[in-house]
Image (tube, helix red, strand yellow):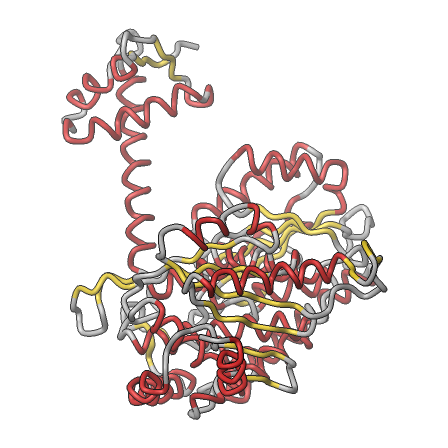
Length: 531
């Protein structure tokens, strides 16, 4: 297509929200008006389903749950007046608690002001707060944030080491809806031990964000933690960032959470439109459907040309892949749906993998995110008439053009600046796009049986580990190969798992298992060490 034709298509396709100053450009997606007409009935059905969802329809039949994350920024829309009041009360409590911490009305037992914040969570309970913190943080932050977002002991040691002597000034927020999520529980126990080693009372530094009546709720109440904030069963982890899950850390950091919620609310309003060309989330969902043939046949590459949006692709990985990666459609047919998401920031992308994107396997489409404002202060001219930010813009435009020359399709989202309102709008935009796309491909975006399957499998491994340790300790004089031990446990079909467990146990002295090397690694012999 000639540049003048492309310009005409740009003008006819461009969506622009003047209030949020956000634009969506689908001109580099090669679908025509016929595609839009063909998809319109499906989209109208998706709009109706989304309206039912916001009205309180049961969205997750597996767990008998509504899905109401949209109510978090518009409480008046909640399906029950009592829910509206809970949302408003929680927001007020979050702001009051953060203010009390900043003013020094809530302090550590020794009177130290809290200057550091340790967030303990997993999945959406960490990814959302991390994205918000990284995108909006500055040297003016009221508190410095760290995260336990995995059950990796070395990773947690690294975080605690980074906090160093600041532990006595550290507030800990533990986030888990059920209170039984193992990664979060493990992180809490590790943090508790670190505080104990420093001679500090963990409970006097701790806050919980959890479901009413959960295991964590019970622990926090019994031990007298500083505060407990609610996680409702109608808010999924990956859509929880505008609940206390994301708002409490953001408020403590010093971010204007009212503006973040307002950005999300305004975007929600735009994405409720049933006029497709006026609905930015629908335009995204249509682009995904076109590019991936409605079957996930191409990956989604997220390329934000802004350092502050580096974590956006990681946040979107969970939101999109956990929501859309489904074996079955809503009728129970096997469809193997999904969209794989990966990304890096520009212009690092040009030195990382744009070579393959332009000339290699054509199994993707791109979403560029352009940010117009470079920085608050004036920029240095790195050469006559050009700043570093000008170069960044040039690299974005060059990469976009270079990909399109090779028939690599892309969507471009343009925002004026990175602000709380913009970040809230981007979160809301993708939440709605995921919901609409799920309807287009007829899957339920709001349940995730595969995640539970992985948790159950991990539980089976740990149960087997307990059996292995018991057998080794019963016969401390005997050395076992993995095959010997699998037979002794009457679990010959689990020999590979037994081998992997033994190898890990021997690498860590905590369990008291020694290793005698065999000629080949699977012939290694293991025994319980005597005290």
